[in-house]
Image (tube, rainbow, N blue to C red; front, top):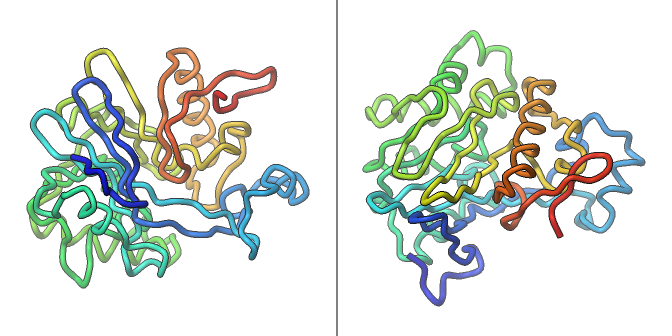
Length: 281
C-alpha cells in the first residue's frame, strides 16, 4: 500500500493484526483556541497552549483521514473538508494518489459523523468522489443530519455541508446505516462515542488480539487528554462528550490501547497522572 515516496501528506504504515493502516491527510485548519476549548479561562488556555499557536494566534489542527487495508477490502475513514471548505484542505485525493490509491479503489468509506471537516471531501464539483464505494454511518447520526427539525436549529456552517453531501449518498443508494458496536469490514468496527454529535462514533480496528482506536472528534489533542472536561463550541452535548472522553481514556489506560487522532498527529498511548491523564512519554 505504501511506497518509498509516499509524500509529506502520508504517514508511515502501521499494523493492527492483519489490518494495515496509513494516515492520508486532507490538510488542516487553524482554529481560534476558544473554539476548541470553549469553557476555559483565557489565561489558563494561553498557558496550556504556549508554543503551539501560529503567528496569528490560531491552533493548527490536521484533518487526518485514515486508509485501512483489510484482508479483503480497502477502507477510508472520513474524507476531510474538501476543497470547498478551505484553501488549506482538499488534499485527500493527492494523499491517496501518493500511495497509489485511486478513488475507484476504495471499497468502503466509514463516516464517523457529519461535520464538514469529515464529510466535505465526499463531494467535489457537485459529484460524489467515491461513487464505487459503500458509505457507512451511524443510524443515529444520519437521522439527526437528515432531519429538517434538527437542521433548522443549527448554523449554516454545519447544515450546508450536510445538505450538500448526504442527499447525494442517499440518491445514489450508497449509504448503509448501522447501530451499536458494528462490524463494518473485516477487523473494522464503528463504535458509538456520542456527545460531540448525536451519533458521533469512533472506529476501532481489532485484529489478531490487537486494537487501535481512531478517535475522530472525541479528543482534539493533548489538551483534551489532560483536561477531558474542556468542551468545544461544536460539542452538541458537552456533558455527554466528557463522559465519552473519560470512558475512552480509562479504557486506553487499562488496556494500554493505542489511539490515533484525527485532529492531532501520531499514534499514542495514555497513562494516568495524579489528577487525570496524559499522553504516554
